[in-house]
Length: 422
Ligand code: ARG
Ligand code: ZN
Image (cartoon, rainbow, N blue to C red; front, side, top):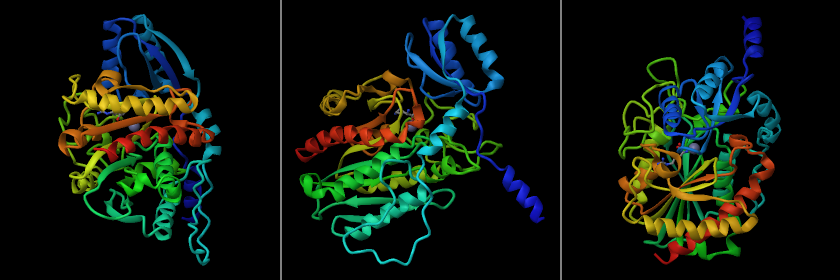
């Protein structure tokens, strides 16, 4: 038995992507665009659209398994689409980016925390796993009890805690900003930004006290802790997106960002359990989505802004995602986004595109941002798709974490300034 166990664990390996290729595809007319959308909607168990098909003449990134590259290229050529291979072997990229992960936490020594200094391993020069993020959250809360309160919103399917930090100087009735990250497991820059945002607000409080004196912040760094863990696991999958709750068949996981109850399952999601955008058996069927929902509802009356941080594409998105129609107050959302992006881009020229999710990325219903606005009544609901535009995609090199964070923070500050005056 011991030998069998030894062999099994030696063979256990992370999902491999040998021979998987990422194609950048451009449909040049309506007919071929519709073909792409059909693949996206109906074959999402095979083709992993890293970016959604947008519209005619725009490019889409699709990861294709080796067994399907021939079929895929045949379709592209039959419909006269423009394409090139952007990543020739996804496995190679995964191996290169492994250097970007922080080493696992050392076993906690019985050291006393020296007063006033949190001890955590996050330094935003590498990506940190879930235990390191929990350690960070707990240390920050223990070190700054006057600014930070941590509570649990509940557990994930696999029993991982889903903490929420309230960053506040007290008082009541203040305007609030609700920010979250990590709803999609493979988008590692998202928790890396959100944890940094916590650090900036708390540890750098003295540099800009107005943002915390006048605003209550509710921050959840990892909405999909099971999926996130799976992307780090030696037996997991670096490119996992969904949560890790089982379905009726063999395929695991629901796309939490298709599981929210605002025009749920009305387009841009799939009922294929194996699909990357599987919307779940019912709206809010997933405990992680319910935990966020309840956390948001409990502070919705004071919350002016909802931020969902994702990657990649460099978009500052507004609702709606379920329809191409604009919200009545679209101009307000757009104007604030424009001021934010102006400051963001001024840092080092990183361009961002502003618009509604549907109009920029195509229909996607059941998303958290639509629910935040339509369901919870939070006027300014934004999904921010951070770096890059696809050179590295989900595997943004760790040496870009700080640059990403600094520029997005400039945008967030603009929004915070506006919230103070609302
Ligand atoms: N790429 C994100 C996703 O697929 C975008 C979500 C944007 N929001 C929306 N309502 N469609 O989840
Ligand atoms: Zn995402």
